[in-house]
Image (cartoon, rainbow, N blue to C red):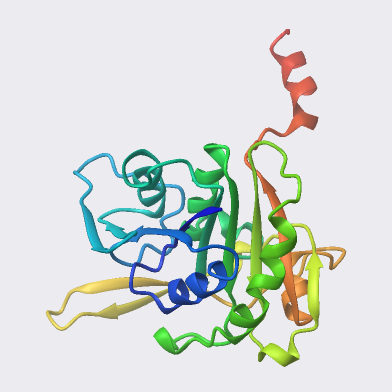
Length: 254
């Protein structure tokens, strides 16, 4: 089984090392193509206004001077000798829960794999507090990663779908299990803009985040993580709101 590994935290991210150890439990045919630098929040963006550079670091290990989407596209069109059987993206440093998946470079790399018709899984390690940098503990992902991936290797995936996995911010032995749940949503009033002044005297602004909100019904990825479970959420790429089609057609005389 050929597996493509990628992420949005960059080629030297600790989470990518964790992902490689998870993937080696299933195959030795691993290819790593990841952004050269951190691309958190890049979403499903594609580099169009400048050239993308490809650098080889070792056998089957490459970095791309662009976004996670660039990395997967380069992997599929330039680097790999053939189509992979699986795309694993992560393990991200931080949560990709609720509608924050729309910002996520980690999820977007898996989206690109899904668009290419490849079984794709995004994996993220939630952590408790900001400012931890590379000190984020990946114990839950390390211990539970293979347990989550294994049942998905031969599970039926509908066309243009992917799986989003989040690990709770707990020691491995404290994880309660795995829950298959829907995507939650946030109240975007929670965000903040932190203002500061750089050493040259210029103002800058930094986006901040507040705590997680709950989804009505308490049956989403947000609550699963809060309850100490690994969350597994199937996502679809068709954003059409089918319930609105009939009413809109009527308005336009169709």
